[in-house]
Image (cartoon, rainbow, N blue to C red; front, top):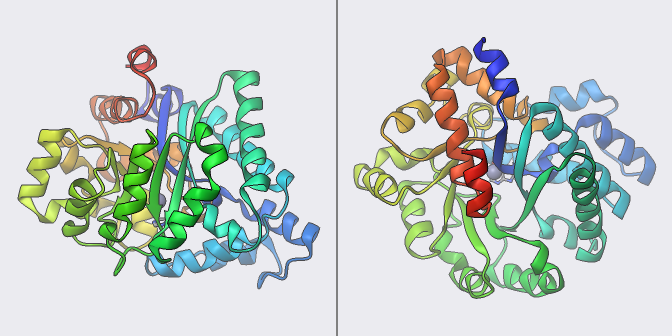
Amino acid sequence: MSIESLIQSLPKAELHLHIEGSLEPELMMHLAQKHQVDLPYKSIEQVRKAYQFEDLQSFLDLYYLGASVLIDEQDFYQLMWQYLCQCRAQNIVHTEIMFDPQTHTHRGIGFDIFMPGFLRAMEVAYQQWGQSSQLILSFLRHLPEQDAIDTFVQAQPYLHQVTAVGLDSSELNHPPTKFKSVYAQAAKKGLKLVAHAGEEGPPEYIWEALNELQVDRIDHGVRSIEDPELVQTLINKQMPLTVCPLSNTKLCVFDDMTQHNILSMLERDILVTVNSDDPSYFGGYLNENFLALHQAFDLTPAQLIQLVKNSFKASFLDESKKRYWL
Ligand code: HPA
Ligand code: ZN
């Protein structure tokens, strides 16, 4: 079997996906028209053309603009539904999905609008084809910690539907330690903890996520390679990194895919996984990320299978379900 067929046919897990980043230009334009939202794009081609980024912030500006078309429950349902249909098409049997409440609450759209939309789509996908999915509530790190704490209070009625909390948005100058209290509150509620760290930020931010926030997984973490002691710690702890190859090249974290360090990390026995991050902005869903790695590195079946196994191992599935897939 070719590697391309193996990529398609292997049952896979995805652990780093922002649901707002799966908003395809077609749905964005449709919802803009539905709600009379004024976007600076006249056509779907113009939207795609605008997706040229020089760093994380230049992407985030368009990502928040795009999210402004999401207004009613049906919009959030459709957004989630379209992503879950991609999971089905790509044989992603389990997915852990991040959402950014503050991106919506700051526009006057509450948990009572987006949560029912997300959950309804997740339930229909589960009923129709057994799609396994979980939610990760992510705080926006460019906002004050008090805003995250207030958001966590608003989330209380929905916490039984949430698996973990996360931390995303502009990394530089917003170190993990800023969110120490809200992470302690989430841990107390029995939630798992993840945080973006070492995407653009220095290895110190990864140390902080580990030691101050006590995270269970690091999102990105590609800059860990700059600190040998940190690398050894990640290996010893078997701390998962949710790496996003197309995202990293689109946001110029690496000049091109041949410069990416995921395979050297895999070789060193770091628990790295492959993910799509914001697929509609970065040019591909999970399989396209594997294909891009294959094009750059000529992946062996053994490497591919190890990466796929790592995602189940690093997931928040309970042990019996993990064992089923491993
Ligand atoms: N990094 C940080 N914040 C984000 C990202 C990302 O890749 N995608 C959506 N929010
Ligand atoms: Zn991300």
